[in-house]
Amino acid sequence: MKYAPVRKAVFPVAGLGTRFLPATKSIPKEMLPIVDKPLIQYAVEEAVEAGIETLVFVVNHKKMAILEHFDEDADLQSHLLVQGKHDLHAQIRDIIPSSVSTAHVIQEEALGLGHAVWCAKSLVGDEPFAVLLADDLIRSPATGCLKQMVDAYRATGVGSIGVEKIPAAMTDRYGIVSVQADAKGRDYIHAIVEKPAPDVAPSRLGVVGRYILPGEIFGLLESVRAGVGGEIQLTDAIAALLENEQLLAHAFEGIRYDCGSRQGFIRATVDYALGHDDLRDSLLEYFATLV
Ligand code: G1P
Image 1 (tube, protein in one colour):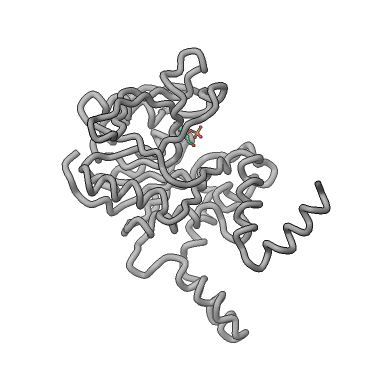
Image 2 (tube, helix red, strand yellow):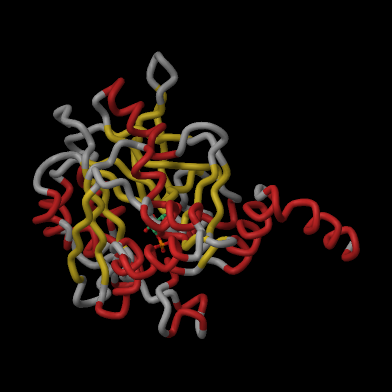
């Protein structure tokens, strides 16, 4: 991977969100809030913290609420000002910094994550870029997961994929990587497989939705065939990329919540709520009445 700064991040947000039906019948799953902020905003904030300058949303026609969320809303802003709600006004005004731009592309058909990323090709060009899956919500102690990865990329010139150890029985829910450590203890990805059954999985290292990839991936996405679930898989293009390029497995610092599942979503809601000073004590009191 020729070094060039990571300036763009792709957010594939055209998925159907069937696990949250009926809530997601008309609301994109990425707009479901954890406490008071939609999932997509957490991912966008993580990208902005990592120095991303352009946010590329891959949407479908039913997901326009995501684009509206990041649009300026002058009426709401003046309304909040008139009401003297200055904190809220600042939050809405600064939802993304003015130095960061947004772009979007429509994914006409739900053909898979790989296809969604490929749809961003003309907006990304051939430079290295990030991919963030908003339903993987990652809460990091100090530095956000993508910034950790961008920092590693700056130091090594090698892209990476976020990984974490998962239970052996759950390999068929994730991309799974096997790694080889170099002398400095960096884990280079040796192989990657999409959702293998536990008995054939090469390891228990599961892919989480954070990637720094070179622009070459777009050419590979064009030639991969439909894989697991009949979908064009990003994992399969990454497997092809590994024939010529190195990628690191980034075991991030932080906790990942699988907000694509109800259990992960509820856990995230509880943990994030406990992180709010104005909610913590009353919630703990309430929990004490339950156990
Ligand atoms: C996608 C990827 C998979 C990865 C997962 C992380 O799967 O294809 O490799 O482990 O995201 O959330 P999906 O959750 O879209 O089925």
